[in-house]
Image (cartoon, rainbow, N blue to C red; front, top):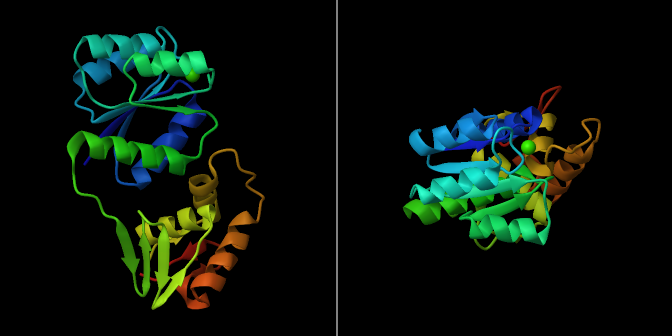
Length: 220
Ligand code: CA
């Protein structure tokens, strides 16, 4: 199992990232300031660090620089509100493997985390998810329902991937919203229902169950 260090002082973002990563099978630890983050990253046996730049006590640039000077080679994904070109260059030159600016979608962060871990360890990846008569190829982004090939929009793809990773499990609207649309969503929105309807139209109505008052489920 992969252990991920989340160096982030904004509690809302830290817990959003943590929840998402745990739901995807990762073990997580949060460090809310730069000094703690450096200590953990240096000695804690993590596989990857998600590093905010604006941190109390010492900023992410300084943490990153000292980690690299200490020959700590684990992947570092910088996650920050600063989006100027200068900061991006500084981060990458400082030894960051990847860079994301806030606000971000969790799906995108997850994809980058997986990519960095794969590059680091060369573990074979699952490229086709299957359940019942459905399959989704993560490389070609093509879905199949029985013998039919189905074209999906980018959001429909992410939504179907989420269901296929949790077959038989009821996913609440809120879980789906935060996973597919990020943390800047309007909880009163009916966008999940709209997209589930669209998926049903493409895949067949029987492929997604409505669980009244709870959410939706891909029959396992
Ligand atoms: Ca911060």
